[in-house]
Length: 90
Image (cartoon, rainbow, N blue to C red; front, top):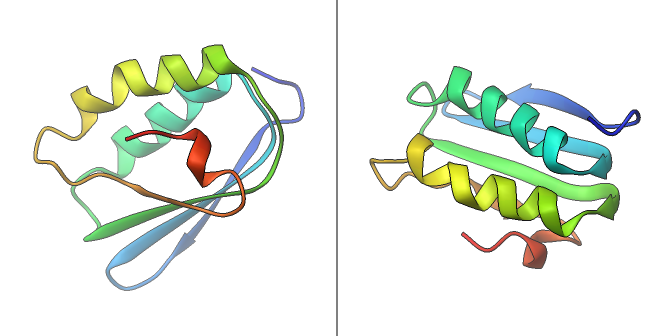
């Protein structure tokens, strides 16, 4: 994992907000996947804020995109927000 990568959780009544900070690489992608696995099904909506990401590694994006379908079989996709949302193609 990128040594400066962190995920912060903010919970609403029906939604979960995750804020990613630091550099996003392959290991960071697995950390995001594992965080989503723990929360999948508990919230109506999941928002992932990308505003505080610095470096976004193409391999990290690929790892996330190759694994997200396993998490969201019910088509309940997370919503990416923030200035880097366009980098995450779900």
